[in-house]
Figure 1: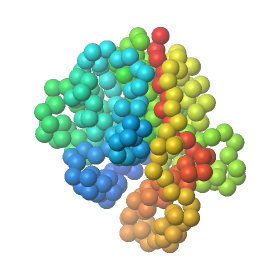
Figure 2: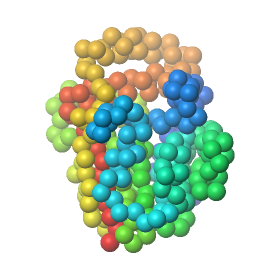
Figure 3: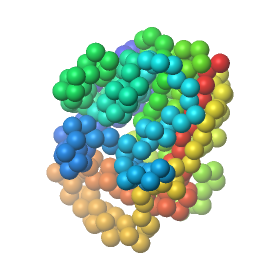
Amino acid sequence: MPVPRTVPPDAARQARRVARYYRWLDRLSWFHERRAEAGHGALPVHRALADPAGGAASPFVIHRLMLEGLALPAAPRVLDAGCGYGATMLDLAPRLGGAWLGLTLSPVQAARGMAEVAARGLADRVRIEVGSYDAPLPGRYDLIYGIESLIHSANPARTVANLAEALAPGGHLVVVDDMPEEALPAEAAARLARFRRCWRCPVAPTRQGWLDAFRAAGLAPVAERDLNPLLQVRGMQALAPRLAELERGTRLSRLLGLGVRAEAEIGGLLLETLQTEGHVRYRILAGRRG
């Protein structure tokens, strides 16, 4: 996909790389199968979490948790930086009102998401566009969030600075993502490196790395939550047979043009083992522009 020239060269290269990745996943219906299984027109592709309030585990739980402690105005202006099919906006916009813009690098995701927006009668408040969160952003926003999307950034500090620039005074940036712990054991570090390759995540900052980026962009940290206790994860013993099966089939998959799907699943399983062992924490970090 074309990337605006205003995007820095390394960010533009990474955007094309991620766009190709999702183009293959869209073509191979990996995400679409999950949507169909739930019978939901735009199922979130982020993690299902146990509900601290006692409800069922669901990928929608994060939508409530990431807004806790944030003071948003009535009818907020909101940007979803890496929106996928727009499921988060479709869930929150009817409840919060306001104007919502989602950015995705996938034309397939944008088209299917907008079809669902229209089907729900939300076209007056929600739109999805193909674009990069590293490009200059139109308007000013009361809330910008990225759920499992900013980890794809080639330069997270620069991405945070770009998003912070688009915040209105008092606006919030929320990052929900997988954050490695500092100084991992060698074997865990090797698994993390492979996960990053499989999921096209060149940096994957630690918690401190994100907080440093917040402060450099003029954002004061205001909220934080470790979500690992709410994850639905399994250990290496449970995942090893599937990993071995995928490893055996990877070469054939690549010959058939299906290697990206295998890599995506391998990356997900490796991440799950790292989360189970506490080497990677799934976190919410929120910062406020003064």
